[in-house]
Amino acid sequence: MSQQHNQETTAPDHRDTRKGRLEFNKLRKRLRRQMGKAIADFSMIEAGDRVMVCISGGKDSHAMLELLIALRSSAPIDFDIVAVTLDQKQPGYPEEVLPAYLEQLEIPFYILEKDTYSVVRAIVPEGKTTCGLCSRLRRGTLYGFAEQIGASKIALGHHRDDIVETLFLNLFFGGKLKAMPAKLKSDDGQHLVIRPLAYCRESDIADYARAMQFPIIPCNLCGTQENLQRQEIKSMLRGWEQQYPGRTETIFRALGNVAPSHLMDQTLFDFKGLDVEVDQSLGLPGIRVVNL
Ligand code: SF4
Image 1 (cartoon, rainbow, N blue to C red):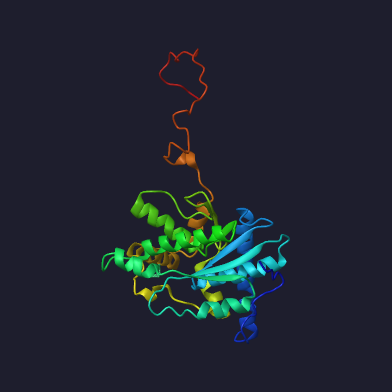
Image 2 (image 1 turned 90 degrees about the vertical axis):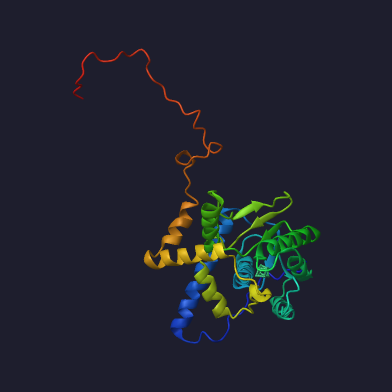
């Protein structure tokens, strides 16, 4: 695979006021710092890794790729970046957009073509949300390709807000205290999936994507509405954030600050084995009122 370690994508010209430039530089610094910290905290990338970066064409995956390329140019370790995108053959998919963009980044990239759209349409009844099956098929194809190219890590563009939303989805609709991991082994045990944007706020990524003018391809070309439950959670979190600024961040911090002894999961904490030493030889006092 070719390497291009000293390359950064160029910022567009429209940040032409001094204030705009300062704000943008602060934003870029923050995102780079947060990504670097997440990668270090979870040992997401090691020397010699081949990181397959999954590009959906949305703002998150674009930002992830650009930030990873920048990070690699200053990283003390050597690793490969390979961008991969899947054309699922949704009607109206602009198939020329991503190849043209990826070409100018001068990194190895692959466009996979697979008509999962027709499969989803054929299986999911009219009016039902198709995103669940569509994502599973996409994941399966991408993981299979990761194996073909010997990718040691698969990078996905989920961010802090996705993680918090997933926590509440599982809590409210699944009865589980579980979010979305920053690093995990895939179900088949064959791949390590990483989420380098785990510490980054969605609003920062959106601002960054706008400033960088990434060529965004909307995910809803297929006409499917986003899952209703996720929409509800998003609007709940938005409301909280407006009323209590910083609440999402507080909830996110809680995910790294878990006290199994104060929850109820008997597989995480040995409640039955809890014990204390008591002096059994002591008798009960013979008086009723005890002045201590
Ligand atoms: S919006 Fe369409 S393309 Fe995107 S995940 Fe859902 S079904 Fe798939």
